[in-house]
Image (cartoon, rainbow, N blue to C red; front, side, top):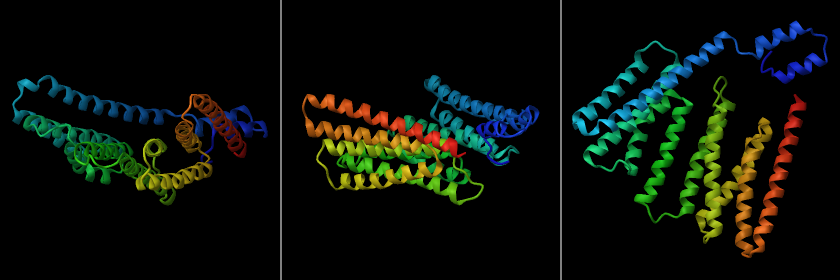
Length: 318
């Protein structure tokens, strides 16, 4: 039996003559986690915890002993740790998951190295080029490892680099253009992940990764459209609006196809925020607060009712 759920077993038990011992055996084999599964979980949990504490300890070590270390010790120790962790990834006979977790820690340490270098030579550790260098120097690791948490860190660095660039260099770029660019970047990552999961057998992009990236894309689209309504609309705003309508529609279609309520919850929430802003901008009266409040209550109630109905329908179809 493949992809059997607990609800399926309950339905079978109610409409068949299978005894309690048989139900217990099916639950044990297909639903409950066995000893091997718990050992795998605990092993990955403690490896992740160990790498996280190690990286945090290194960062706090430099923060506490900064004044007592010379610049060669600061840079040399950081490089030594990066070389050591990378060597473990390359030569240690461990599982792929463990190596990817350690490589993610090494990627964070690359950022610490750039921060140390920037503090020593006063290059501006909070400038966009700090994050740009960090992004470029871990790009190869990200591509080779194909590890979702590392891809998430990579996307976070891309977003941060672009935002800081617009604040420090390209100050004349409009907010609509910035939101449009970030929306397209994160939406492209989400669409690529969905396409890879559906087209390649044996390759599955984690659902949590797709949800986080999709939420970022929807957030940037919402901010850009709201700003466009409140400010004077331009070509970037119209392009963002058209792109958002198309991709929002595709997101709802994907949710109905996968029978997953994430997009059906997040996208209507974005639309409610946008429409509420538009109502405030059109009415511009004290009575608008009452009307918008009624609209929000009614629309959220309808969204929740629709989600509950779809969940019941999908459950019955199983």
